[in-house]
Image 1 (cartoon, rainbow, N blue to C red):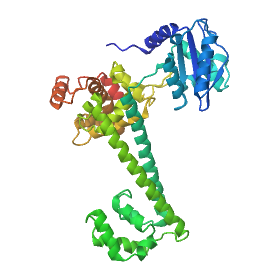
Image 2 (image 1 turned 45 degrees about the vertical axis):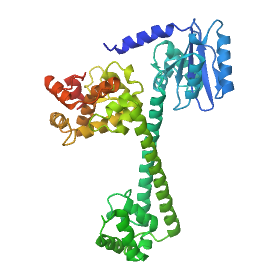
Image 3 (image 1 turned 90 degrees about the horizontal axis):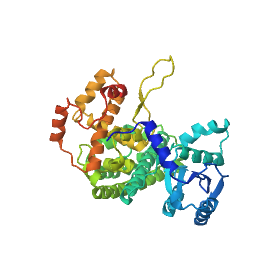
Length: 442
């Protein structure tokens, strides 16, 4: 299937939008939305405020039909500029009402706000009018309606990412607290997140607490928690540094309480993370494409869940380059007139979680035992030693393979993959990238 050029897609959207009698632009807010509508003559009506409530939504729908006689919900095309999650409840109401929905990016609205009136004025009313205008110009994207299973995956993968970020933030805070309460503690343990250091801090939060503790009690706790990994000599060394610690002795009660609270919050975040990951693994087993992705080397249930959740509807993609653009991994160059050609770079405009997951997966494929290690080394040698750029290039090469498996549900077959690579000169048979594009990103 041939992928349309950007100008072709815009013209097709303009023709499609012209088939609707009424265009509506919505600027979503927390407590109220602003919307502007225009009829077949494409003259915009004054903005109206829509309170975020069932009564407000129903009143707005009645007012719209009254303002445009002879119109049914099926004749209405609504473009929404979302404010984060704000506007999603209104979108669900309008979809159930019978209107057709599209999404207008806030970036587009921001950059075109001065075109119409040559004014930097920025408010919700003006934004709603701009959205209404952009709908007619075809500068929108279709709103994907996720299947219930995929919607659940997206919700849980987002929550898992937030919990992981929270866990990292709490770990950093704990380390900062120990810099004052027990600076030498981390010299004895590689990571404060491990069970043994956390058990010690839960029992003796400060250096003075451990220094005053009897050695048999400390050794017994360490031996039990670490299952004999840490020996008695290590415990003696830890207690010796605790006795000579340079820790601050002021506000001991407050520091002791702070360490305890941080440990409790870390335990809670860890427990919730485990619960979410278990739920994700169960959902992955129910999704054909996600289950097939887990057969790919280095793709676990969490990686597969994130890929499917971020793609939304894999069957809606006609080519891998569309996925690259969704992930913000498509290439762009900035140049003008006689100015020097700038280096081609990834745009990084898209779904950051998808881009992050592809990069991490590519990193695993580039390990010494990875399937694309030779390709990675060749890219590094060719691009002057830029390792991150080489991993990005490998990530781009993986997209066609992952998209094909997600769409077809076919299990990974390494022998088939190797035969196809050999037949294509060690290039992925499903890849649509030119050598120049790979060289550019690498």
